[in-house]
Length: 165
Image (cartoon, rainbow, N blue to C red):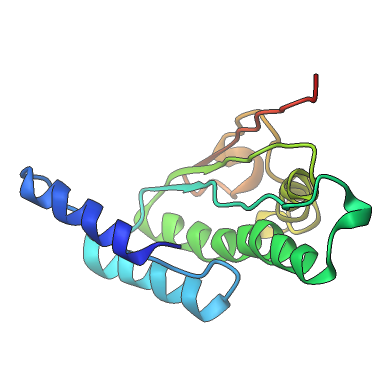
């Protein structure tokens, strides 16, 4: 998270005549995620679109070479972060009367890819929205009738896959 770069980007957008606010969060920290979504709602009157694409790869190319603290960081960002953002964004989208929720994902031959795909599983199937066991799609769009209880929230999952040559 680079708060300075986010603030500078918002400043440049504003300078060019647009409207922007830099709102940052530690997505592995529940109070931070909740505060960011609350600030978005207070600033803009609601949330219309959520694109969850934050993720970190491991620096190790082999799982057996990965340090435990690195593994825990990857899981905290890629799995816990996806869960927490989803937990607070879906209700915000519903309060606004609907919107779009997109789950992006990075891919590599590392544990970062493993955690990213598991995050889709955890938030999409095991902990699906409103108890609908069909969950969020993995690479396929699902309308609000599928997972969000007629709330007007549309979901999509995007995932690129990088395979070693």
